[in-house]
Length: 199
Image (cartoon, rainbow, N blue to C red; front, side):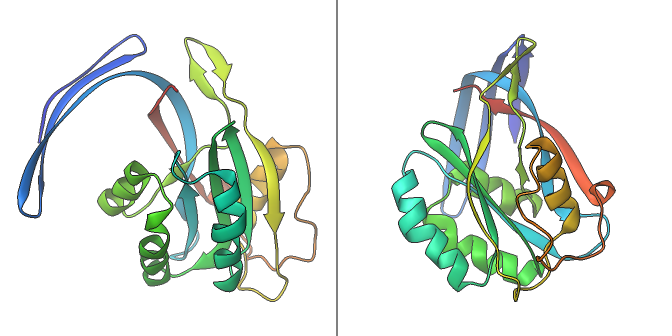
């Protein structure tokens, strides 16, 4: 239950009470926030979804490369690794999977993820990932770049709309034509506008 939630310019103030198993938690927020736009890992053209991962400080780039990516490959998932700042990274797996598969993978990768990202998935049954800079006081900050990707032509199909959008944003057809895709387009993506902490 939210008791207070207000925004003053780029500052967000809030007080919330959450009921968790065996406990009641009072959360307060006083943070500099940024506006951003992300895409959801669910789509308008299919019931299948994609795995998105958002890492925090506890999972550095070395751990992502040596532990997370080999696990993704073992799970038969294609991946695109993004750097969103010098110590923060995201992964989009464009491989289409069922909601049950996604639920199991979210539990498996929970040990690596930002807990807030996992909480939003549990609350909303979907997540948003941004591939564009944050907007703070009208200025574009925190550029994003692709630092690695891996595709397997024998995997399940990828969501073509995601690949097209990423190719457009980064002006690079990095995924090529050998990847199996569905018949989706960028119009099948679902956009979410939201606030994010401006760190």
